[in-house]
Structure formats: structure tokens, C-alpha cells
Length: 105
Image (tube, rainbow, N blue to C red):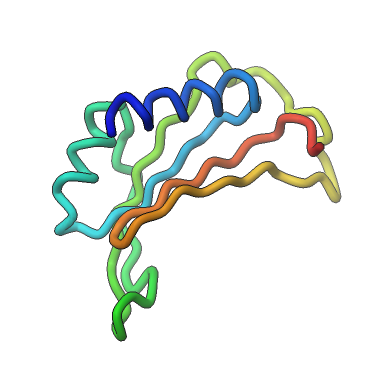
């Protein structure tokens, strides 16, 4: 899992030009929390009642990893009306999203 998600993040930063993977993980999902920590994510916040799962609202921790080489780059197509590139990979109890501003093809 570590190798696969690591490759996905490299692809997001590199070829896709995205800059901010975000993982939303239920606080008791210790394997997913350990995974994002190993891959250099930092805990950014806590969202109460974030997703409705199995009949109830579940809290999630929000973890992010920004591309340190991307701070000065302005995305292609930025400005009013620009589309962000979003992708997500999910499992019960964890979700990974990435926002970026590569071209909007």
C-alpha cells in the first residue's frame, strides 16, 4: 500500500501537475493514519460529522502533503472560472483527494 500510494503521489505532483493531496481518515483507522504519516502527510485539521457512513455521521482527520517545489508556480488556467483538477481514491474510513491547477484537459 505504501509503495502504491507513493507512486500515485509522485504521479500527481509530476505528470498531472497537482500540488495538494488531502487524505480524510476516520480517527480509529490506524492503518490509514500510519500510511499517510509514512508518506510525509501532516495533520491539518479535524472535521466533525464529515461523511455519512453505515447509517451515521463520522468524524475525520484531514491530512495534507503539499508539493514543496510548487509554491511559486501559478497553475495554468487559474483565475475566475478556472477548473481545478480533482481525483479521489477512497475506501471505507479513508479518502484521498488532490487539488491542483495543471491544465484542465
